[in-house]
Image (tube, rainbow, N blue to C red; front, side, top):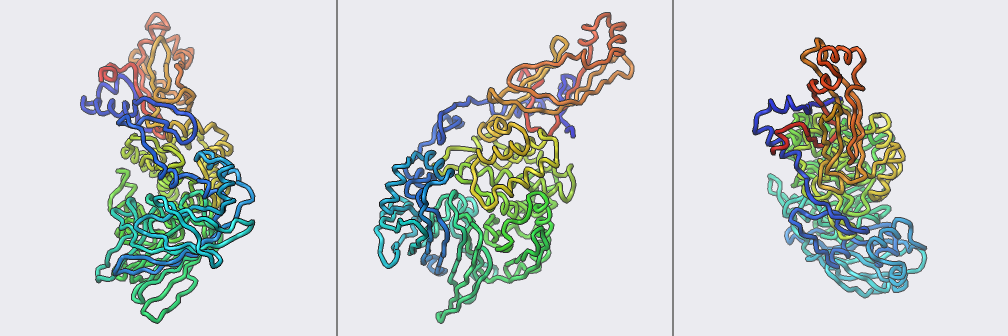
Length: 637
């Protein structure tokens, strides 16, 4: 559909001066110099302060696929944690199972190369039986033990190098004992760690949230997103007055004689490290069964006693959210592990099969509509957004933190898909357009690889509008839905990077998606459609784009003449602008009868064409800026 951007000299002049100044300022967003660099892991762009980031070995150890990470494949964790609430301390053991790789798979080989690691480095680490796990201070790795042998451990920052581990072909286990007082979350879930609070009755209310800071903030693990365990057992010991809720299904409760008990939660699917969670409170529990695409799905809710009534009402949102996302993305990815919604003392997060909730049992985002369209108050933001992450983040997971847009862009876009499913296309359209006001254009969505660098927060709103624009380019809703379904089939329970994801999308859509992805995700500038009328032509091109950028855009052109009765000529068509000037001869749009009438009145075809007034609308589904070159107001700003 055509939106409401009307681009004409005549209509623009009618706008109040302060609005015209604001409009011009918006069009100038992103006019910055782009600096190219060679190879993975380099800056694509200058930052706004013209400074370049300074990376250290610590960054590479955290974000890279090191030789000590590459030669072994993680298969299983049994995480055992005793929680001392009074001391705000954890102690326990993580029994980590791994398989010695016979050779590096294609993905691992590519990521080690990106990290500056060669095959000889990997081979040397394998022969030495030297592996890297991660645990952040003030937590401490007490010991590493394998088959009764205490292994040698060396610490370098948050990286712990363990030497002498079994390196024969096959699967092996190593026991990692740890203890300490983990970092207290300053502003969860963004500034993460462990949250220690109390409920309204003064009972402990404890939870983990560590997407940005990393799971190694509270337990030892292979803290890189590319390698996930195939399964996991989470055993958490807490006082008898409380309950721990973690990922997967409750396998059993083990009572102890000291007034504590251990809950054992089993995850039978691959799980990302940051999705592992503990949630400790005096929970009330209720449940239901959702009959989904893959059959009955158990849905469990854990809430504080004082919020039980509100939860029973608000969580009616869950089944209809599952219904919408199974339509768009395919079956819920973790039927074997069930779905849970767990109340926590922070806003919420996408912990796999154990989604956490703290949105106040109200629609919107903390009671407000992020889009300003009104449609954001038709759903509970945390339920919809975090549940969408079960598909994009937990099943289909980024292989490097720099590819976090795969999680957040698709999930932010999923909010509009939820609206489209339940309220129709117009609701979705208005919602996603409203989110454009939150885009900052501050730095690239995809930053450097291999250094644990996360891109701009524009991965949410700029990223979702990139997808919305791409859908408009495709102009085939059935094909678009098939692409979304296909992504979740093809990359089911896998880690993936931008290149592979875009390549798959191109294969399904039959489009060259890469130049568009590069522009919207690797550049801070918004494509600017420049147009104007000159010598009887509509002239147009994109600026603020890469030289190979080409993207269709749908327009509506209205030509009118005061001298010819009923002579408003409306043309709707698709332009394919590039960075080079192109033109459409206006006389070729008009039929001969109109041209003959104009010739009689104006004496020549040229005079008639120059007398025409024009109005141009750009379809607002396309996220582009625009500049009317015939507007003197635009030029003067």
